[in-house]
Structures are given as structure tokens and as C-alpha cells.
Amino acid sequence: MQILAVDVGTGTQDILLFDSERELENCPAMIMPSPTTLVADGIRAATAQRRDVLLTGYTMGGGPSGWAARDHLEAGLRVFATPEAARTFDDDLEAVQQMGVILVSEDEAAHLPDAVPVHMRDLDYANIESAFARFGVRLRPDALAVAVFDHGAAPPGFSDRVFRFNYITDTVRRRNSLTAFAYLAPDIPPALTRFQAVAANAASVCPGVPLVVMDTAPAAMLGALEDPVVRSHRSSLLCNVGNMHTLAFHLIDRRIVGLFEHHTGRLTVGKLDAYLEQLARGTISNQEVFEDSGHGALVVEENAEKPGLLAVTGPRQRLLLGSAWQPHFAVPHGSMMLAGCFGLLQAVAARLPETRSAIERSSIGPTDAS
Image 1: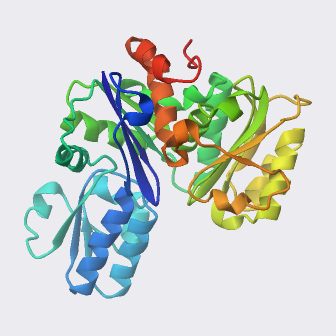
Image 2: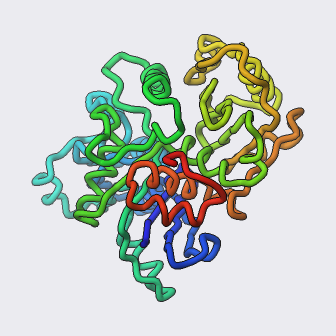
């Protein structure tokens, strides 16, 4: 059995090809530049050539690609985009047009030969397949699993931070498990437009192959539980320090008793330590985190058992060097950067029962589906 797991971040896309006939540590894996970084590079190359840009494809992760598009426009050049691609920058297309982006239909896009085409997508299956093929690995997945960060399509005038955290709160209250953040393609909520775009993209390149889509930080936290040190603690804090967002959970027996989400760029080690202390005590305030330009906080269980460990993952985990918590930097199966992929495998086991036994044979303990 093969499962292709792709964890899409702002800086990198972390790729694991699970093969049930191999030890998990021997499965092929890659850490490559993120799709949004590659799109940004394409836009910047067009800027240097003083040429207009045409964005087509799917809604995907923004950040670097959005910054490059703004720089392109400020250089006096034009950015054309189909509506689906344009939603990368904002689900409100009027806001995208106010940026200066010119919306075009698919038919109109075909008549812009002088513009440099840049294709938008979070899942570049063809390039992944080609890279593996270079090393003699044939890609024939029985399932796909992709992790992306999705703010969700907030109504015009509604805070996307509030909308995102409302979604997190509703998810935890609906089913208190990290795997609740993972969906089979037909079950993706309509408001999760980036998840929906991944599903459409995957269906076009791997028709008939089941897909699980999951939020990135919960995937990393689920993967961190594959670290024996983390799994040995009944009560722990798990913190994923991403390039753009930091999400921390207080877990007891894998049950979520509290959490908060903030913007990494707004945090220092001292401020993050303080929020983690409040999370551990169950005193963290949603209003305080939001007013500090974060997304929010949720206390599910007051007076919960204090955590005995802080486990950290994420590309900016060095932010917690020197933390008073003396954190454990989780290395599930020997690789911190693949934590999200290992978490995706756990999510697949929960969503696709036919994969469970093969995945559990490679795990250090039972999956959440057991």
C-alpha cells in the first residue's frame, strides 16, 4: 500500500511516500520549497523581465505569492488572474480587484499570450511524481493526504481571524480529537475554500484515489505524538511554531483541554512562554490573544491536570530556545520536518479504515482510530 502525504507550509512542502512494504524510516521523503514560494519566484522573474503576469489554476496558500504580486503591481506591471486563482489573495474578489489585480475568465486568459503564465496549486502531483521517478520510485498511491492552512471564506466585513477561530472552536466541540481537523474530500465544509481547491486539484490528477485533507498544525501535533518521549506523557503541551502561525494544544490522553493560535511574527520567547503558562493553567483568555493580533484561545476543561512536558515542532521552533519550559523538540521517527506527514498518516488511518492496520504496523502505538 502506498500513501502520498504532502504537508504544505509557507516555506516548505514536506513530502512522504508511505509504503507498507518498507520500514517507515526507509520510506522516500523530500523537503522542498513550498508552492507559494515557487509561485512568488515565477512572479518575481516576470517582474525582472518587465512583463505582465497571468495567474491561473486553483486557490492556494498566499503569503509570499501575494507579496510578490503586490510588488509586481507597484512596479507598474499588470497581474491578470482567473477568479479561482485570485481567491488565493482574498476570498472576496472585490478586495482582490482593489489590490489592482485584473480578473479574467478562462476564455479571456487564453488570449493573453504576452503575459507570463503562472499556474497556482498547492498539490503539484506531476513534479512530485517526476522527482520520485528520477530515483526509480514509481508513484501509484492508494490514498492521498494533504495538509494546508485554511483561514476559511469569511463573509465580507467579517474578521478572518474570528472566522478561523470559530471554525477551530466548532471543530473541537463537535469531536474532541486532533483527527477532527481532517476530512475526506466529500466531507469538506464549503467555507474551507483552500481545502476544496486541494480536493478539486487532487481529483484532476488522481481520479478515484481517496483524499484526506487536514489543517497543518493539528497534523504536526498528531505527528509529534509519534515521538516516544511525547507519547509517554499523559498530559502535555504541544506547540507548532510555523513560519506564519503558532498553534498550541494542551492534551490529556490525546484529548484537547485547551488551545490558542497566534501569529508567529508577533511572538517573542517571553510572550510565548507566558501564553503557554496560561494555557497550562487553563486561564488563557480568548479576548487577550485576539487583541494581541492573534486568532484566539479556548479552554475546554478548567482545572485540568497540569502538563508534564512542552513538545515543540515547526520550522521556527528555535523561537523557544531558552524557554523557561525547557521544551522537548519532537523528532517523530527521527524527523521533525516530517511531523505533519506522520500526522497525516494517522488521519488517514482514522478516515480510511482499510488503511489502519498497515499504518499501525509502522506507528509506535495505536492510532486515534483504534
